[in-house]
Length: 64
Image (tube, rainbow, N blue to C red; front, side, top):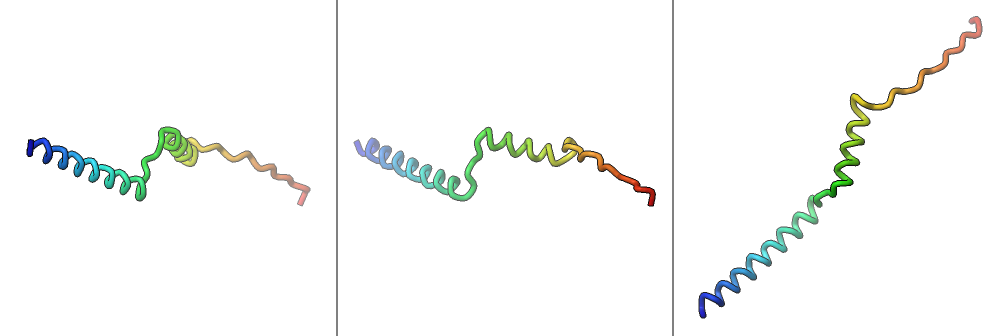
């Protein structure tokens, strides 16, 4: 009987500690979703080697 009570108390303590840990993670560094990670990866790729080229500039020479 005493083991059952202490097991329940230990389980409750572990559950409480897990909730505190999850709240700490949420507050400081929230885990990003798949869509957010993909969007950031696409933005990173678009700003590097595979970025869009700028359009050519038209140079006009008026005989000067």
